[in-house]
Image 1 (cartoon, rainbow, N blue to C red):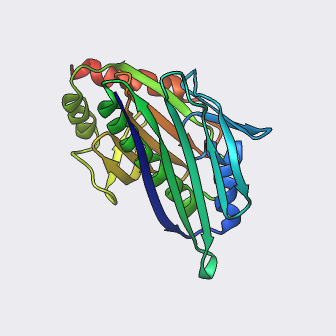
Image 2: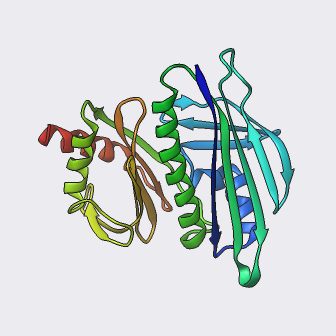
Length: 240
């Protein structure tokens, strides 16, 4: 039992094809919008997320400023994930970006994994758009911290939304986290929320492994990871 899937996403961004290419084809660029830390070397994309190494993703097509594709090898049960990017420059420095994530999810629980992957990829693509719009050319220092185990996800989101002043919508100004950071919500779906400040992109993700994840992208030197871990632990300890 399993399922093949394809998740197409596209947007027009106020960035040049050169800026888009740097964001999707280099380690520092990918670090600034995707998950964890990534390096690109010798035709292979390697990503580590919260101490876990993702399967290597081999580059299968690379036409600078136009087309990039890479994907993992199939495992014994058929699992693989592939990414494809199409870039088309438009007038006045804008660019059309299309990202397609595809692959195969094995097992009887593929539906839950597909839902988590879909919501996560929507957030990552929204972050790519936000990065290209507000931070193109800058490099983030990824922070990935896990909160305590979650057994009731509706309650967990209710607690986080209360911290943000209620269920947020894109464009809402919110205050949250260690030091009462102020920012603007740039994206939300059922399993993620993203907030932009003047020097960072902050994201909260419903981890498929059962924890709320702080997956933040500060564009300054930042060593606040332990603070976020403690903040998540305190938030859910105070509101079980």
